[in-house]
Amino acid sequence: MNRRVFITGYGIITAIGSNGPENFASLRNERSGYGRLDFLQTVHRDEIYCCEIKLSDDALCRYAGVPTKAGFSRTTLLGLIAAREAIDSAGLTEAETTSAGLVSATTAGGIRELESYYYELQDPESTGDFLAFLDTGDPGEHTERMADILNMKRYLATVSTACASAANSIIFGARLIANGLADIMICGGSEALSKVTINGFNSLKILDRDLCKPFDHNRNGLNLGEGAGFLVLEAEERLGHPGKKAIAELCGYASLNDAFHQTASSPEGTGTLQAMRKALAMGGIAPEDVDYINAHGTGTENNDLSEGLSVRALFKDQVPPFSSTKPYTGHTTSAAGSVEAAFCLMGFEHDAIFPNLNFSRPMEELGIRPVTELRPGAGLRYILSNSLGFGGSTTSLLFAKC
Image (cartoon, rainbow, N blue to C red; front, side, top):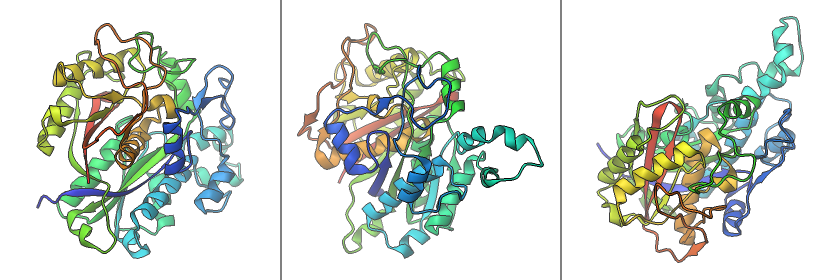
């Protein structure tokens, strides 16, 4: 069995909006979510700015429709909000949601909450509300909490492959459908900002203290962000149901490991090149048919050169329009693949390419320029979306407009 897989809905929450329409408005108006941290307690608050969602944990609980002080991590709440919007967007009934599978991606999970109660947790005699967060350090905990609220029991899984996690969760769900093991899958990723994340990237010296500048000669690192994005994937047979309409087909995908370095992509872009080639081959699409690439584009020296060289190698002198949307949301790490997949779907819906902010000077090694102004009427038919992660994980998704 090899069934076709279609996307019928999506949901998203990031620093530039609490739902799809708000995110689209920010993309269209070139509004970034970059700024000072208001909610995460860290000594770096005044020196490392990020793309933080400006809602407290209690406000997120109310938005998600769950009680406060009940042990929901911020990662769980963001995922729940985005997944619910995706379910509504796809028009799934309660019974259809219950019968669906859930694959969610995260790396840090509820580590933010464990950081807050670190000292209390060292004392086995301590008691208090913090005990509700005892299990949130397990990345899979957030998937189980989401599934409990959504009453989903059939198939649950958590993917943790660093910054390619959410893209790989989409592939995971698509393969279950393609092989007849599921008819509906809700797939994506969620990640909240935490001290571990900020301190870790800071120790690698790859955080830009100013706005990040993907694919620019003067790029100086990435901006971190938080968010969640979820897609509803459905088998082709379900498109015959009354009122069902697909936004796009996931017609190609590939995930591999370039096995070069724990925290760096291969300098030549070997992994990204192979992932894009395999995704196009699966979709039966020639390179010249690609209308837009939503690049991983973090703004680090290594990523942008590696990814840019792979794009040049594949498309040669006919590089399609490309841009990175990370200057808007920051790098949402394990959620980035599904957040940016949602942006690709918005691109189809509005037939627009969103510009690569903060770009001024091309990289000398590449000689190519990303899209720097909103491009309406782009005539989008096929979009590639790349995700690269620590540990060598490299993923490309190919979407076809319906």
